Length: 227
Length: 227
Image (cartoon, rainbow over all chains, first blue to last red; front, side, top):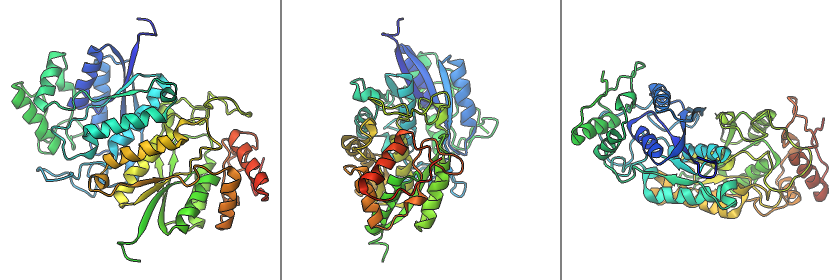
């Protein structure tokens, strides 16, 4: 494949079920994949180990971890140890919401995409299961793409990077079925908000409950290691 | 002043001439000011010392420094020691451009604004002197504000944070005259891309040249300490 036809993508990767499925989808579409993770002071540090494991096993072109200390601004159960991770669903925007997190992560991905000359940024957001997060809605992603086209050299030169969210309208069970069809090994992934250092999931947080129900609804054995 | 009428702002502060003038302008408009700086691997580290000094002397409500290692993605003379800072003007987008930097900084400011319940984010971008940077244009800032309104709790609830860029259409000389009228002590500030550890400016980089010409054009003595 010549450089002219090479498609290159930056993919936000948390080592979880959704973003790992996104890597498989981008690879199936012929993208050279560059995965990006963040060491942002999250309490579920084992996700960084999972992200590195996923990138290695899926043979991506490069995986980078950007250090960004979001504890400085606080405001979320995921970065502020004074706020507990809830073990039951709540109405409205959950305390696990990290203020402007997708905007921050997409923006650093945008910078790396510019350095790489990438065509697209992939993000595993989902409007079905995470309807409480404002930055998981299609109108948000459209506005982000418009802003990104004006923010960068590539945009100014007429080739703006695209923002791809292939899971946006899929249920968790659909995501899992698509991933299994593409050969994703979900035992590599970790979704829990408060996993142990050994990578065992709590089975109780929002993220665990959605994941477990997804496997049940998909009729596929759940490979997750629970505490 | 009651909480209902308190106006609160997050202000991006580099310790330089522009962002320091912005703090003075926001204070003059009655904002409670929270300043935000970034330790992003920049070679001009003394800007962080200048930013802390400015925030202290101007008695802002709080100053935070977020650690964010942009060296991981590279691509700029300001974060990549393999690329030299040029000492003469060039056409097009300069190598001191940090990919998506304003987008990244605004996004972290957006997260902090959400935590604080701030009404506005102030940024000292300028379309006159920095026309080579795509993320200093008014159309970019408008698109950013639209995206931000869709990204956050506050936006969903009908009170989006505003993006204020009061220097956008001012020349460097005008900025300096406005600041001097508001009592800004520019000897506190540092604009150089490659200042010494003691905070002395090189006098040769783009940023130094624009600053020096600004004082000359304003007819105001330049308080900068040069090497």
